[in-house]
Amino acid sequence: MNRDSWMYFGLGLSLGAVVATLFAPASGSDTRQMIAQKASEGIDQLKNQSQAWKGSVTDAMNDTVQKTKDTVQKAGRTLQYGKDNLNAAVQGAKDAYREAVATTPNM
Image 1 (cartoon, helix red, strand yellow):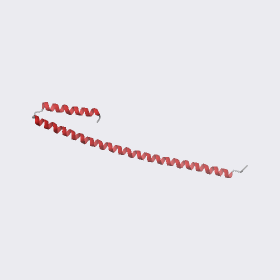
Image 2 (cartoon, helix red, strand yellow; image 1 turned 120 degrees about the vertical axis):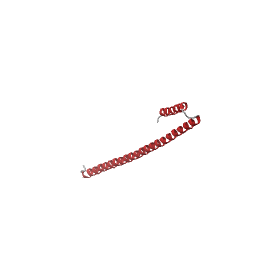
Image 3 (cartoon, helix red, strand yellow; image 1 turned 90 degrees about the horizontal axis):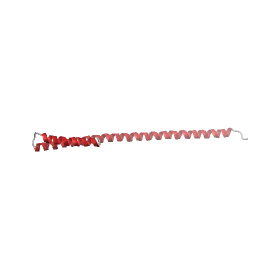
Image 4 (cartoon, helix red, strand yellow; image 1 turned 45 degrees about the vertical axis):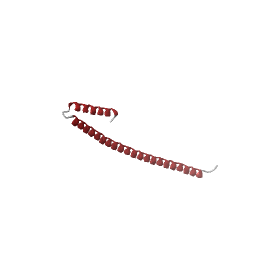
């Protein structure tokens, strides 16, 4: 939830408590007990929801870390492949040069 949602939640909770107090057919102590119970239930629900969000965020973070590791490993393999190909090309050029020099008559 964003900040405005929390503000509206608190405002709704407060307004509901005031309306319940004004129109409650129960005694004052019963009404206070009911308000305390409902507030406790609301707090419990918020705790449960925050735990669920925490789990979702943790899962998303772990997934992102794993994907990043996989990408870095793939990049490393790609760089090694390019390095190997470049070394092979340089060695081939050296060999071709040596062969050309060896087979060319001196003038």
